Length: 170
Image: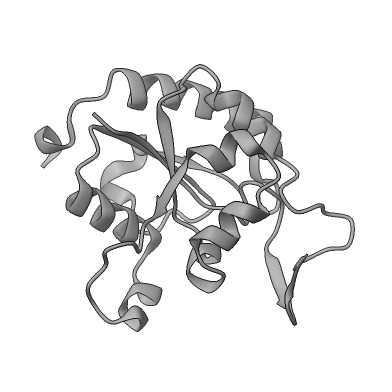
């Protein structure tokens, strides 16, 4: 009976992308705070206490799931994180890195069969057959776009409350 939100970080929880500098992670622009929209996501998920988060971000591959989880400032979001899309992937890690984001998510869905799912990402590649299950953010705006936040609110209701089981979508 799992209900899963696949969460990307860059271009979703903050504008732009983060860069690694030594052992630090920094925003791509000095005026952008990492995770600036974590509270937005936290409030969107409040009506859905049993929705878990599976990281679909490159952060979880580069830094590891635990380090990524610990970097997120919202304890409400951290507590929801149960894994990453690459968990259980059995092919060469190089293959994983070149898969479209949607293919990564769909591979996780195929392997784990959550009852209901939704993805929020600034990448739309690989989601062509599942556009209704993607909240697509613009990289330079993330969840700072009120129209995207409203669409997200609607998609949460549609996909995580009234969605058909995954098996019936084949």
